[in-house]
Length: 320
Image 1 (cartoon, rainbow, N blue to C red):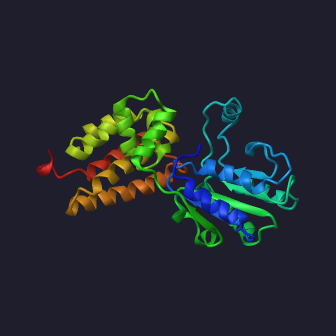
Image 2: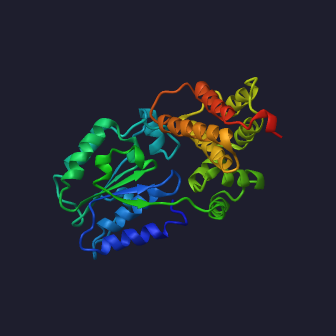
Image 3: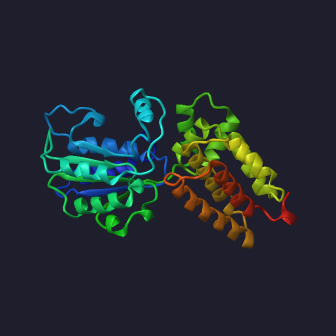
């Protein structure tokens, strides 16, 4: 899915595509939920297209290789094949990169170019990154890499230095609202407003807010920030709203929501209160980076998120 705001990225990509020296590696950088993955696949299709040669869809194109996290189990593989929601492994493995590299010894099938999409490159395991570097350093003729990255600062400097960066900016609240109106027209006004406020410019995050039914979670988070949680009762309520056995996708959505809530509070805070908000936000960024790749007890993760919000709460003497 592509969103409003891609226009600048398309202009830069197409200008490079029309130039005689198209760079061989790109990083699509920006927060999650801006449509970078869809852009990467559409851009790859433009890259490999040859005049006069009929092109299959990107997902079936022999010259577009997509590396992404594989289904977590055989059962998840079956769910994927049936078009149902499924869990994925935590990382893109080194074996996936090596299998891709064996394809690079052959010529592209339908034209002179091949595109390698890695979505997201943030999930490459360490061995996979090291293997990828060899291809980035000495790319075969006609091979181009498109790396989707939600947190490009986490990529190795050696990877970043070999890539040209294409930045995707967050959308304005009105643009996020239009995406919700188009994709989730039945959403009630209160949920819609909360989703837009919590999305921090990411339409994907807003859609996740709605699909994950995070309205009650959002309400509890705001109560913790307003009143603190000396008795741990609100943290317990937050864990209850998150659920006893949330999957990784829900935990990540909750963590991203907490980050957005704190980001919305920091401008109005002052002094020590502002410093606590910044510190809590920093820890949530760290936690958000770990949730997709580490084993976490869901209850403990929920309590940690609640604890960070409580630490950032408005001082009781000035709370309304």
